[in-house]
Image (tube, rainbow, N blue to C red; front, side, top):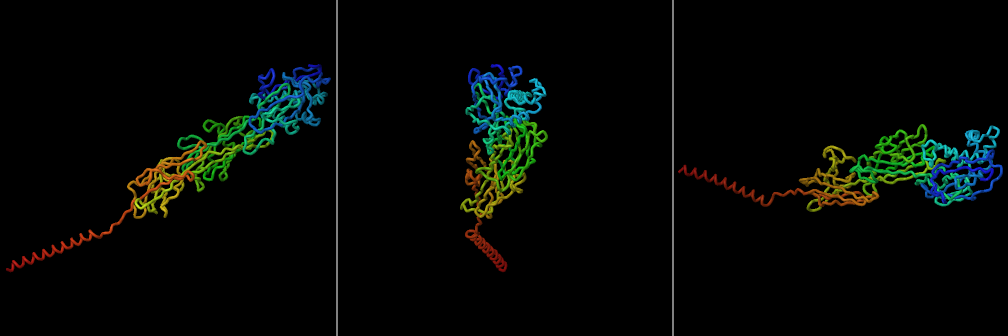
Length: 570
């Protein structure tokens, strides 16, 4: 070290690997600038020292959450940085002109003045000059960055929202022009000195993305080539529906009309949440037209629904038409926020919806939902990003009936049916209800002998019961048909096939005619006709013969009486 030269120690806020003899040295601390060698009365060096190290340094920022991100590089100070964490020849960067120097010192405030008096032996008379010395400002800033995470609440590589490291970075962002731009994965080279890297706002895509701005990267550039991880983490959203046959949660399920369907939305809060002073969290769930939901059925938890903490009352919950919103404009607000939320935790939203109405889709593409999570994506701005989840699809099915004469295949109108599910409930007015078949909704074949769409069947077993035969026809001895509906899905939850197994004496086939696109199973059934026979032919001859016998018998009785009378007269 040359006479009059001061060196400032430095360390690093990120996980850094250096080229050279100390490549594998652990360096996971925030940048600190503790003065380790000061000549008495130097206060900025009496003579200009010679440069001891290379004029340029380099760093590569490794992307974590933003594949297309660039980073604005703010350089507040130039310095000679060696490979032993030492800075010397500290000077204001050209981007920090006299006016910006004054504004910066003003931003540091009275705490900076008190620090100068306590650590530099500066009296009131010397404060105005001492506070403008670049080396003093750098040393104070570095010391405060270390102190800002002294609570141990946050890992040092993630400065908290209320920390000096974060607050001062916002001031720099708002007041100093960047000295350059770094691209993730590419080496950034610039004059040695003390830098701040922040995500370029224009590289945060607000539409359907998980882009998240980095927390401040305070970095002493120089000495050796380094790499540093972006301090950001992507949020996520997942939506699932519970299958009623096994209670498992997944991307799809099948249900009966009128059933309550459990849904679950899980949102992951980003790991750098603690670096925000304001954070918007808004989940929007767009339900398909065949589903209805009530705001009263919605619950919100930090953690999962079984073991987490319920925070429903801390969110604004609204239902408008088919849109459900669950949000809080600032979860970090001391009064209306959600103190239970921590970096990297999950939010779980649960509710039940009902499959109902004329807009239900049968088979085909089903009844899907689209859920989005809108979140604050930059700790130093009010911008938001949005990530989208399409899924939690619900399918339901229908049965068609074709009725015909057992012998002639003539279509038969007027046949009446009811349908019962495996629980013994009957379909009535768009819902499955308890009761007798007399109370159930009657489905009647039309002039084409068809019932089109007994709607709202789940996968499973149903009983189709004929309750009234067409005129001149008789009910079968056993008027019940058993129908088993079995859908098939691919790995993405898309309906790929549908089968129907039919059992019953008056069914024409043991396999229903199915159409996965319309979600229908067709059943063909027959009836026997009661044929009326005319009373003619042999039946008439029999009557005539009986009449002749009766006449003959009468004549015989008359003749017998006459013979007896004649014998008595003789």
